[in-house]
Length: 109
Image (cartoon, rainbow, N blue to C red; front, side, top):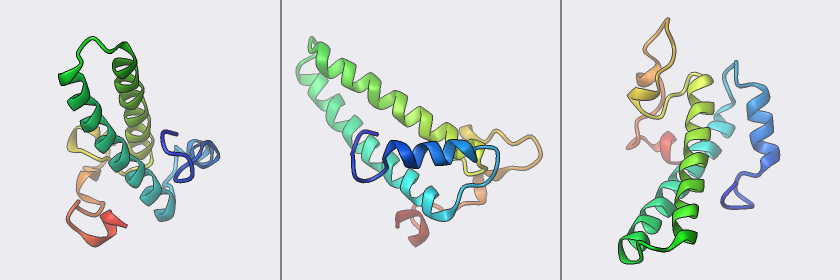
């Protein structure tokens, strides 16, 4: 992952194995935290690209961050925990409202 020590590839492979089922709350918190870190890094990278639009390295980093973000959002959606309303893939229920809202304590742990 982007930030080693927080969520490594072994954690992600464990989540992938159970992508058809619900992931544990601990794994969900790790993934949400990783999304928060990626979003922060995306904003920082966007600001850098605003100042240096010809930086191929920064643009590559931006696209890698987007790919990581999409991968994590898909894992969470497949497990029944969509991050945004657009990520709700369930055909039997509206899962968007099931998880903690961003301002709730559980969402920020």
